[in-house]
Length: 77
Image (cartoon, one colour):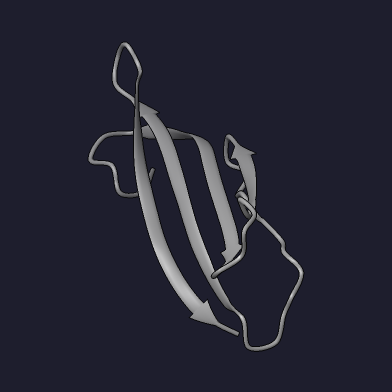
């Protein structure tokens, strides 16, 4: 909500993490309200992890929801 030009309320955050090249869908977690979404995945030395996410806030009268998607971002750990 800090990036909004009018007063707003955060209502959803989503964080996803996937090991690059893996067959599965990866791991995702949701955070409701002001709770920050945090996702954990098993650590593999030298693996490249791909992260994506989304943050949603509501503002206005009547309230409207606005979401911003972030990523994908890659990091080798």
